[in-house]
Image 1 (cartoon, rainbow, N blue to C red):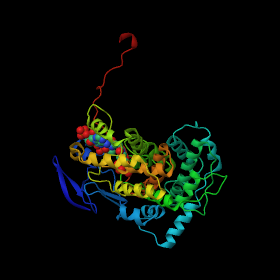
Image 2 (cartoon, rainbow, N blue to C red; image 1 turned 180 degrees about the horizontal axis):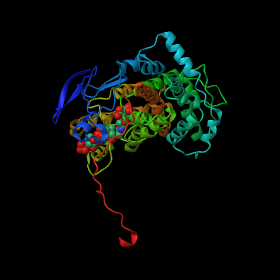
Image 3 (tube, rainbow, N blue to C red; image 1 turned 90 degrees about the horizontal axis):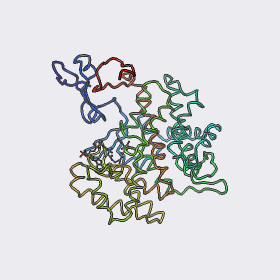
Image 4 (cartoon, helix red, strand yellow; image 1 turned 90 degrees about the vertical axis):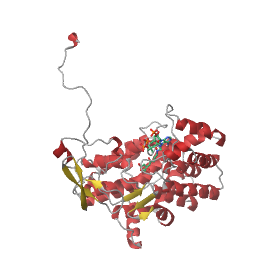
Length: 424
Ligand code: SDX
């Protein structure tokens, strides 16, 4: 919808309103008409696309998936239902949910030859390295769902990715601990099947603990999608060239791995463990505020949220609930709460509007469930695959989409002639 214009130089550019949130000025003709580029490293003021999937109000701490608040989805929905919602735009009725869940369930097995990929990695390989490799290799096994111009193949590839990520993730964990891989069990829920493949062993029955299953499913819901974050933008940019969906998701996994992004959940728990005792918190707060110290409070701050990350609020409560139900007391949770209280009263964090984000508490729960810290970002990638494939599908279907190709402000040497080595 174009309601008004913005004058830049002697030209008027259309201003478009979304259904909610900041308006955008459409500058697609700006370079052609002005000979200038806009400059926005980090895309702090740039809308890269139009999307109807997820909306964040960073000032109010609101996160909506297709209009539904994340706290309501976390408390009342399921990861399979949220996946359907993100992919299709509406909550399913029972028949639609059962059909979708059955489709995903029946795609959880991996091509048997993919198991040999794992044996090429060192035992101590980081599971995210394995995820990047194995997911990128999927296109070598599923050629019948790589024609992105065919909506049916796009949906088959999307279902395969959502279905196979738990199997790939569980196998990465099993390989790292030297235990045999378990095949999927179609009688279990999506999340229950993942827990069994991860923590079950062939030598005995594995009983899915409903407390852990519910906590894990809630964690998946909270990590499903988040507007145009770095890894989602990576998936969209890779997809804009026509790359196959498996390669695009592998690119997203690689980007998510960074400690400034999805790698922060692993870094946050390692930081909380390093702090160890509440008495050491002031030392780390001082380091975080010290311009000359590269240390940052991991799990704190966000590009968009300048208020509480609503996901962190849900995870904070879930951490207490899960530890209580499992009868676990983890001093790291006490340290996290104490750190949060001290930081939120500190002028530095108040002035810069730094609050706990999704990665601050998630590690406490994942650790209580039994995951090593190296698996934390793998679990983030598993859940975010739903958002990545939904955003990828939306991009491919967008008539405005074209290959992403940013420009630059060039500050290097101007043209000069080559000088032979003997004359330098
Ligand atoms: C995720 O984008 C998404 O939606 C991501 C995500 C998703 O679901 O996809 O929400 C998942 O990635 C969450 C964020 C996880 N990362 C971390 O927890 C790492 C620690 N946080 C920071 O590195 C940082 O807050 C970012 C990367 C999250 C955001 O960085 P920005 O928006 O680029 O902000 P900035 O680096 O410019 O910081 C602004 C100021 C700076 O100080 P000044 O230079 O203005 O003096 O705040 C300071 C920063 O030094 N600051 C911090 C800090 N985060 C920002 N200072 C101490 N500790 C921190 N954690």
